[in-house]
Length: 138
Length: 273
Image 1: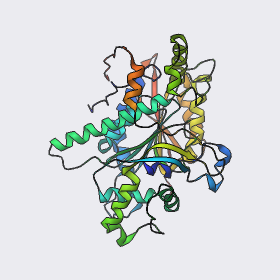
Image 2 (image 1 turned 180 degrees about the vertical axis):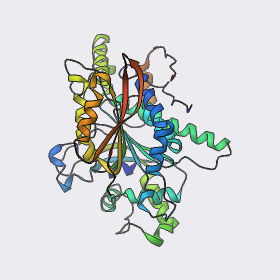
Image 3 (image 1 turned 120 degrees about the horizontal axis):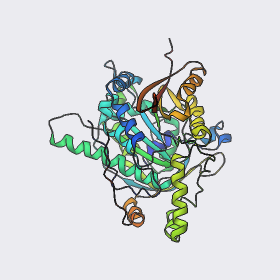
Image 4 (image 1 turned 135 degrees about the horizontal axis):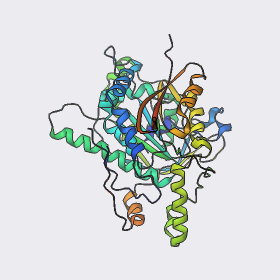
């Protein structure tokens, strides 16, 4: 799960929706992994309008990232390569591979985090010898 | 024809295998008329780089199954949305489907990126799959955050609607330890979630439709597949009666006694004048 996901999800419990404490959800026991991706300044600039800055600052702080500026970069700051690189690293390169996302209102984990990066292990265990049919679109 | 994403790594024991309805989704999104409509809606503005219309679109699929539809949207984002930078998020109640989707979408994006490296195209696909989360429809999504919502529902009319899986039913260590007969039962249950739609095949779809006005952004659009027994014309009328919302059939397949067997309905907010 990319860190930016925290910006788009909330508690699944209906009663929590109206509580400010249900956003952002809080990472607990998060284990992080860096996945290197090409740095595209324009991409990050276009991701920024999607980001709720105050909640991102909370998330970054919880994950142990250096403090983000108090306000969302705009104008000239959008041309500062270091600022964009830091955001690229935090939002897109950082993967949360273990841990929980907990609601600040009800204290529960509202839905399951994606499992850690072991898909092949899981698949090989359940796949067995089933034959794959070749299917094509009409 | 644009390539169908590879799902050969997916075990279809508990996951819906791509079929006619999945392919109708791919063909509809990439059709000349639909990709033109979507590209116009989501294309980058040529004005300033800080224009909010340049904001990367978030494309969400509820009930991803193998992930073939979301992977197609991700890999073909230039063709479909007119841009190389979308974020995709997958949701499914079946944890296996989430793992499969992550794999299918990431692999489809990588394939396109590799092809780009060896060709003369200078545009790089930046599209990123941000997560596949185990959750129920749109319940975990932040209001107003979704630009494109895709849904190929369990649409078959059935006497009963299967309940949602518990966390322990989604625990892979449990299913691995099961005796064969219990595993078969568990697999059948998970497969029933992929097709059984309860009354009129609409019980799950109705829950999704109700969530649409809350979860879509101002430029948001949803694509929902319906079968004949779901009575698509009535569904569209109902959506139009919300006030300020449009619903049109934009893709169909399989004529049966003069009716299309499957249709895909586009649902979007009327332009604010």
